[in-house]
Length: 527
Image 1 (tube, one colour):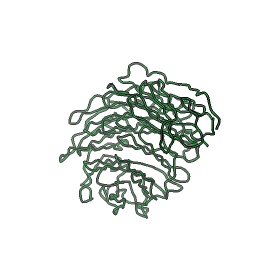
Image 2: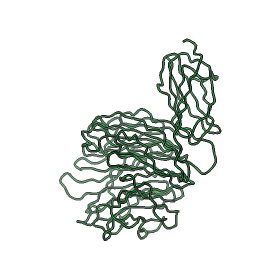
Image 3: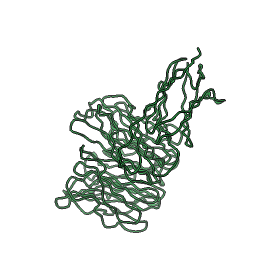
Image 4: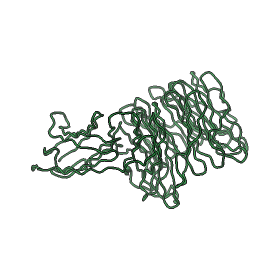
């Protein structure tokens, strides 16, 4: 290749976060992950505390998944083997070791695919029995099952609608389906949680026009405990539960119900070896509370969130203490929808929600570092493209990858053109430390000799960053430079080389290292 005598560099930075946030938070610009295809569903996202994540969604030809390494971008989505047309209601889970599971409904049956750590997803397995109609599958990893899957099932001929489950051994083989709810009850919308402290499933029981939340713990012999009533009865249909279990085995549940003229959010706890506590009101009095979510960190501290009259609210509870007062996460400039919640083992938290201004449909989010309060809400999607159903996960390092579906919400989802986009948040910290570098990318990643390529990355706070090039197979540095990076997004354009060194044909590893921080690498191919 010809010698390139110059390296063009351009730096771009996000604007600073508005004053008043308890800790600096940054969101990198959104980027499309999957182009618009008719029938594409909303993504489900899960992850673990070290920053790895998995996401999955339905397409017209089956379920696709994508993975993300700590601090890295999402990989190209691939189809789950054994999934096909008609897939819907996708859910995912991931363990600390990187094992993942995805479940969905296809042809009226629950199907699941497992991914051993550092391997690909395996061919799908059907879990629910023929002759029964299954809906709303949920999946959890982290307890004795690898994984535990639950769903609502009803015989084709009618009758009771029960909660059913299946548990996989460490080898990935599922045992026979087991009942969770009582055989004569009408049970819907299961919620599931698992940790080293155990596994628990909650659901909504319908009795005519009355509804209540029930829950059962998985026993050592694989059966479930006798279901316990967790909530009072309510004529509201908004009693769908959320549930979480700490590593200690303590359980917390949340839901919304109608009491008098108010629809309120409540929560109750189940200590190890004890009984369910009396429900606490954790939302403000008023109408239209719904969509309760709850999660705990490794110490049993809990976060709950919900939406009330178009405003997302949240409350927190230190383990063993009463719930704190609710606070608003979204603001009055938008009408917010049902939130989603993720809490890391170290206590970092992410809440996402869809929002509308009346003319625009947005994905919004609020972040909380482990040692701080929630920051100001941020619009993380491109307002030019309607965004719905945002969902994400946050690790102990405060890195929060989020995905959402971009489509026209006025159209039938089964016929609308829809795609998937993503953005990455960085929860600021009030503790000193090196900058975190995320989402290192090269575009294009394959170039001709001398062709320009653009490298982008995000920083949690301003830092000097060293960029170095080595042969992909290993060897000495062939070029390096140091630059001042801004908090937020940074972009650098190179013309065929780095630090005065031209790149010939081959595979080259570019490594970016913030001062005192963790290095990230990518490969650029010159051919």
